[in-house]
Image (tube, rainbow, N blue to C red; front, top):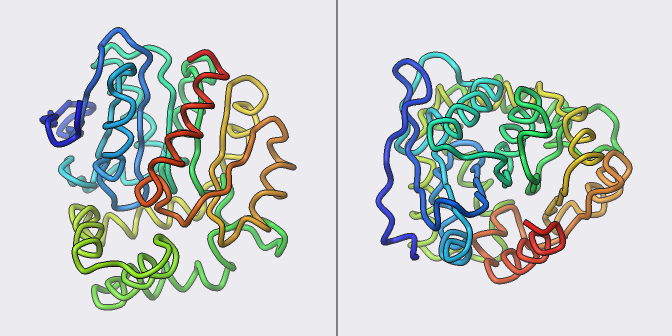
Length: 279
């Protein structure tokens, strides 16, 4: 099945909160639940749905406040997002999914584990974000220095012009390798357009203050796990994460949007992971 042929549906997960969801593939197969990062729609995983939905149940989700899901005045934090995913699985009769998080979607996946327990999932794949985004240790894998992250939270995402400049630079310099065509630029900016600046600001601040190291370590000890890491910070991220989670393989690939820019390589490694875990 192709992404373009799948009609998304709205699933109610809390009072006045509905998530926009693509649900493809055999309903009795192992579910792969893909969770996008800050501001993004689940449509960013279109190539994964195309590749895996012939033999897996593939679910892509717009988290609350993102894409075509409900914009909320409350619950713009990763504990609420994790609870939304747990309820989504209940509504769709999904048992023990393989969670595939990307960027801040990792926090959502670890939040799922925190609230439902590691035995509620069959496997955990995380893509290019540390479980401790803020750390003063210069040898740690973080989203930036404390001063840089403080500036983004208090001076950048607090006004429209500065926020627009931030996302422009982040897409061009961090997310994608090489130059973007105008069509690619517009497409990725459009995937984040469903998230208001106010929602983005709340989620960013919650993300930066999060610490999901215990959940990452629980998963590392008890589940099949895999972490993808972008090339630009692999020299710091890989040793730091391998020390924290020694049983979790790390795969270095591309830039932050590796699943979309390099789908063949990304999907091949995910395929290997699923086969080795008998999933």
